[in-house]
Length: 426
Image 1: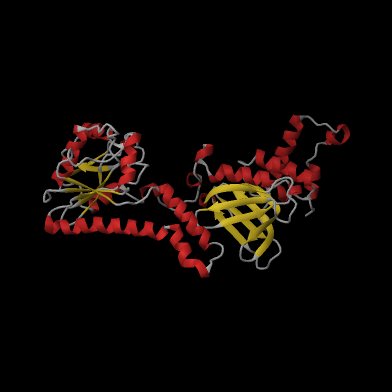
Image 2: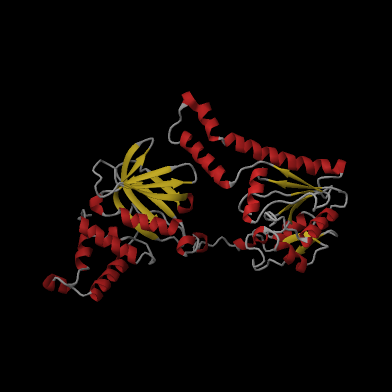
């Protein structure tokens, strides 16, 4: 295959980007030099200024010819429904363990795929786009150092992947745009790849999990708990399942009134019921009490329904995952927590687990000290500085407290309902 000049590469990138949704059995870079020559307009050689319509027709012809070809050796293996969106030649993967590796970088609507060109056996990097959470450009037009111009990908599995591009190839922009588009499909109003995946497994994947069968496995419905389809179309609460287990004493109209007092309509619903003691775990979001201490008679009545559904119990335990300080602060935003004076026979316990922002920052620090190199001499102090083990300890301690309440409730007849929430998203 002939080596392309920078202008020719740029033209190919425009063609791939313009028609990226077409079938992708091949790529623009797989064309031979004779095919590139035949694709040029006969009038362009004589006039030097072909019309826009002629150019578009030529590009379509070249694209069709390329897609009819067999996959090239460096093309990525494709799943059914997967399509190549961009291919960049002469890219260098800066491996933190093996050093720079030259190869070809491909982007599909499902993955990023890199394959070396100068190693035997070949070296590959295969990353599902859903693993990527941030994409950054490295270097600019004035960058002069070797491998100083390219892209860095931050992944959810602890990896940072850096690829160096040659400025004269003009390949970085296309790869960056395609990654931004397909790694974050919701932001670009695109479907998840799962809905474009066309492989037939011989059964309907949507029926693999049957919520009614799961409720039946737990012994539901009972005299105290019923199954409601109020959320069948996800219009009642868009973050809850379509089928909900709720106290039998509460009809659907009452559920709607209770939901209005809960953040994002997440009213208390059953998650698990003890097979022997019938103690339950229900989940919900924070009540919208605000700084004024608003009350909802319907919500208080509904919590009493949950207590009554646990016939052996005379006390209800509300496990709030947040630190108490965070729960107080949420009152300023209209949220808050249950007041034990207005929710009779209820006890509120704060588990002191920090919000997702703190957790994510702690995990980032943990990643930094583990990848790509570990400082053995300061390992323990580095671990302590991330606070990660503190967060894990609090989560495990909270889970043990809930399990203990459920098990001991059979003896003490208390702790029948345990509920947790994660602040400030509920």
